[in-house]
Image (cartoon, rainbow, N blue to C red; front, side):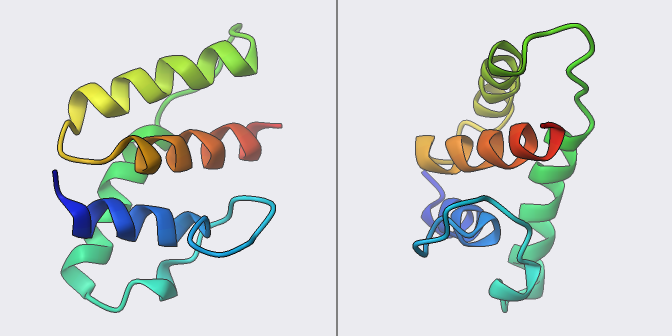
Length: 90
């Protein structure tokens, strides 16, 4: 498990605070290399489109794909990414 990447994803989305909605906070990741790794994972999730899927169903599809393509990130990081992309599509 890549704890640094997982923690950085959670921080990027803002779920390391008491924020009630997800957002994009690249400034929370000081390490440039780590920030770029986070952005690569998030960009891959951004590339997905809900098309005709129900938003909840689409979120599960995106989460499963992110978890499969990035088995080194934590379930909390996957949930943060799903929350971010589904919130932005609302």
